[in-house]
Image (cartoon, rainbow over all chains, first blue to last red; front, top):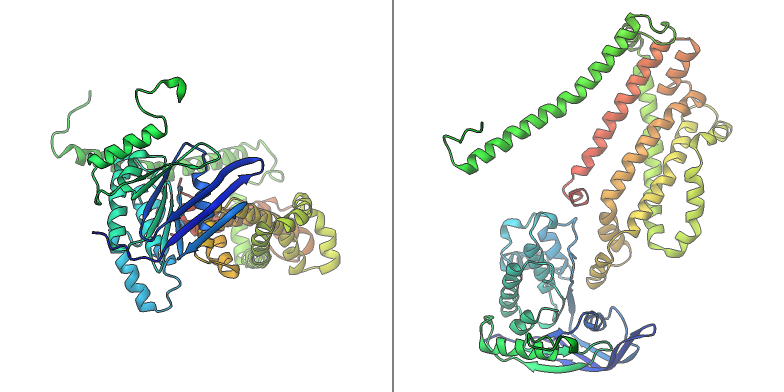
Length: 249
Length: 276
């Protein structure tokens, strides 16, 4: 069973946000509890990334209150590793606040081993596969004293098999280093496989139109009945069932 | 007819084929330019031999070779090479030391960019040779006017290239830098500068090319030695054989130093900028 002792907690209270005349979020309230994996799914352009930007503090809401308890790290959609640094040096960025050199080195060795990149520690990002690069990103955000991970479609640029492996990898890493996670994806299968709670968002301006709790133990198989059931519910909520009348989509 | 491989695994034969192709490519890479240069020499030799042009208008390869020997024995060529190299080095280093930080600063400050870019563009389009009268008036004869002209020729393109490179840094790097608390000088030296380094190296190579072209003109009017002055002296003495000898040295040295600068692109922490 996962040890969920972590300080990270996030609260959005009656948050609304807009870009000029375009209202993106409308009166959204959301509490993410310590150690929880919350996955946001919703139609393209509904404001999922805006929610992450608000949570990270990158943008401020027009209305509402945001509370952040813990150190936040973000895994971005596109390559955000520094290409001029090696794998070790990129991971070390996450450790830069640790002053004790010996502790920093020990932690770095642990992280490199944790993401199975021992043989590639002196390689540069452009010398790695997409999956390896994402593993380095995970190691970087898990380094040091972080409490909360914000993940913006982190596996979307990978092929299907690599995505499956990375989901398993993420769960394994979170077992070792528990964090509160807010994960944005358009992949319903990914949401059902990873989440403790899935929030289905409506079209813009986004509101939470469905909340699904998934209690199946991790790591989950795609064929687990609870995963399949959750996927069906999300498909239904998004109006994507195979037998739906196309005119109503 | 294609014969099937008789021994070894298919992987091995594919590897052998690719190795032999690579060897063939390397041979061609060396041979092709040699063939072109030899052909040019042959044409030049034939024109001289057949007296298609008078010797005073187009010196023969033999006379150029003789002039080479004379210039080397008199140590004039070596002195001129050292003088030119020194002036280019001082002007170019001054330009890089001031131009790259200025470009980094402008790239990060929107209003400064708005204020200075028109002026920088104005000076960029001004031929460095237009500064010759001022160079001589302000710095008289010697190293200084040549250094000044090289500085004026290379500073503005270098500032603008660095500034543009900063503007193209993906914003994601700055977001990551913000997440991990990089600020001020640390942000500049650990994120901004390494992110533009491949483009800065390319800009340095281009600027160096400009500097090497300008030094010839600068030394023709503002100096008493140097490769440009050597050509000017040869022209005054109607010694086009010596002028060609200096021209060959200028071309070869330009290529050689560019090869040295190109080595910078092989540094492991900038390779990412050249591999697509």
